Image (cartoon, rainbow, N blue to C red; front, side, top):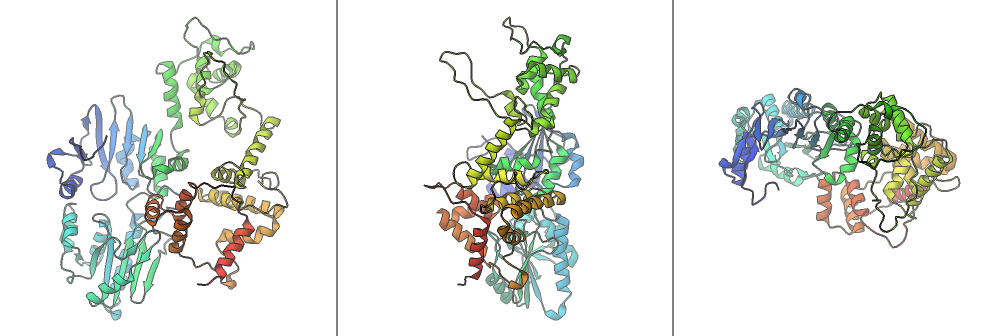
Length: 611
């Protein structure tokens, strides 16, 4: 059941974590079982357990498990992946499951490495210290009870100065067993101009950063300095401006938002999964977004191992060779299942595992695989033709009462791959299926049925096509106003890739349809794409802060500010929060679809408003 108030069993953790748990929570030391990186593995209830460093805060470790059957599992805990981990994780490549810290599992959360952010803080402090003519400066570094110690040490090494912290924080930091840091701390605030302050002392970070210049001014006057310079190290405030990190300034007080985090950025998550190549990834943070997050890793996991494991259940372990009689291609049509109780042959197993209806096709695959059942199944699931074709399912037939036929999903549906009964891309049946899909997407976008998320997916899939036709692939007709969903689908597709050629193709497809079907919306689309409302000389900007937006979201959706804040902590993006609560609302009548022209006109009107 996991630890709770009734838990009375052992807790396996690092020595540093044991110290913190004992001090903060009062847990008895006799219940602690200390495990540190480099220690020999221990066997717990038949499972071999070892730990490696997590590159998170001091004491954080990743747990590695090996079952008696040889299956391997990794639980990363809170972790920031680094190439230095590869050596200790080498034996755990291609693990069954990787339980992954998905705090920043979104392409927009790609920020610089820790070393770069640490050096940024050091450079700012050293440069300001050299400007003696500007008077004294008080440096304030915001942090939690633990964490950010690498920044503290780097600043101490660069300046040679002591670091002030409250006695309570010093007690916490002493438990981390970092002798150099312990000797650098002082509880005398006037002994140094570098202070470690509590989180949010320099401003709140949700839903956007709001600097607390009142508090900073109080610090300045209290310690009689000419300037204050604050640092807020967190990945949430990074605005994607490369090496030019954001800052806020008011008079002699200035605060820098440093993208320093002890969780993996999105690019590091991708590198981690790519290195381990597990059979499955299980997110441990923001689990409500699991399907969306897993899409980022679908080409990085070891899908073939999962297939082999599934097929081995049919063959009793090892892949099995087919009999010659099974491999021979016959034309008698579908075979009649034997009622004599004989063991099914490879053809029967292949058809059961893949959902194939044709015995001839199963025999062809086995012949192509030289009788190897595993290879034959891989040929079926990895066929690119099957992956692209959308198959129309036959109508469900009614089952008479008393019939022994049990309705269940075909086994192939669990693979997320091809459906049964492939058809030609050029067949009328295929075109009919595609037309139905597009019509459903258009209806959803227009509020006449279906899901807006499904409609967005249809628009996204359309603009991503390499053989895009601006007329036939567009999801609206000439003469109709261009739907805003056309832009949203393109933007969503762009946010999920970093490939410049693919981004160019998506934008090209998007604008081609606009020029052909709705040329009047082209200019507005260009401005919306580059994030402006007009030419640069017009100086037309919205100037709407995140506070105003969050207040409007609260009012429109009926959600309290407290729930809004909690959702932001979970989602990490104000736009995602709005979608979360909006999607939970129901309407009495279909909502009028947004058009590009209407959206742009409303934004222009907002920009011209005052007060």
